[in-house]
Length: 200
Image 1 (tube, rainbow, N blue to C red):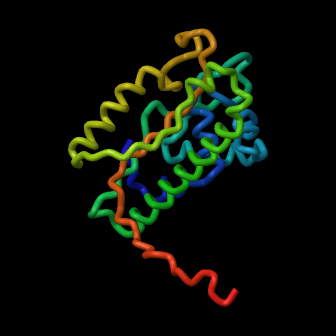
Image 2 (tube, rainbow, N blue to C red):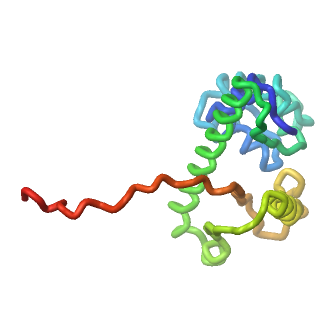
Image 3 (spheres, rainbow, N blue to C red):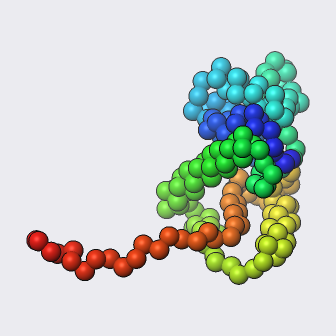
């Protein structure tokens, strides 16, 4: 799903809505009350945010459970993509920037939580966790193919498509954060002054 509707992107860029979508994206349906706990908001606020997400096609009704009196929600079964294009209208470009930054901010918070909790994790999960940053040398076509290859590797493990019953015992919801981009030129700060002790 290639996003290009400014209203939809602005709707999704809300922190509570990203938290709700992350919860539902793990492949389990949930009520407004259940997602409210994850997002740190009231159930009535969660209901409002769920309706907004549904309005723009990010979530939908899920099959009922139990007596069917609770309304269940699930994430739509499609990936979201945001591409910056030269021909983007200013309002589209602004909305894309806003959403990309909101998603990255949310991802950084998730990473920080994981790092803070790592000492409490069982040894096998500490050993399996990886936080890497790798500098590459490639052209644009190679970078596009690399991302496609990464997507193929991740596909069998996507929580939305892999039920707890299909996963091995002890499986948990985990997160992969993938960013591929050409490095922008860094400003050159110059050499520091040698007279930092002057006048002391």
